[in-house]
Length: 301
Image (cartoon, rainbow, N blue to C red; front, side, top):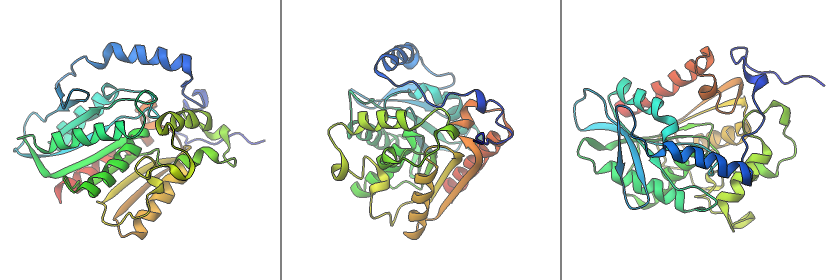
């Protein structure tokens, strides 16, 4: 049996676990560790309250002409883990490099808060961002990674439905889009790192709650959404050794078929969240530069 092949720049791949521990015991421990830092104000940023349940970590450029374009960022964690703080460095960098306001939303997590609560939390943050005096409401992008990418895709659809804010772009890093991936039996688990079928089932089960099969809302799993026409330009980035590769490629194809300008950036031999775990690797820097360039161009149109 041949060994799985990873991108030559990703030297830590063979040492990475195939899954993130998201069992009942480990979930509680990780949550406690995250809670210690969740409310710590970010360096060169601030925490703002959206409503009684939702906050955002806000980063503003040191110099810019206001009102400026903005991005709402949504963190990953399989719908059950993570906090907005984990992406402080990336959000701060984007704010300074592009001269934009970046707000990272602290949404409530499953299983305590299944769909639609996390999505509604993100929508509340989007509305909040759109009315800030230093933000141009016509130049807002929505972005996210992993489960945050799934929420970003769902939020873009929800924004179209409610017609309150019209995002100019959706920026999706290896988004978690399709609960039906959990039923696949043809995936070689040896090629996966950080997120496999077992963790995927736990995440989707927690997020969907009582929903299952044909009862799953397409706003919970955007891959189920039938009409993708009229969505804003989209950038999707994913590695070939990512569990979400196939569902991401399919979603990009469907967006193109619906007439949505879509860039699909596939990285051979890259695993889930490689750009975060091996940020110094040349392939990771190239991935993030491509994403940043796409965002800059979309906000400048």
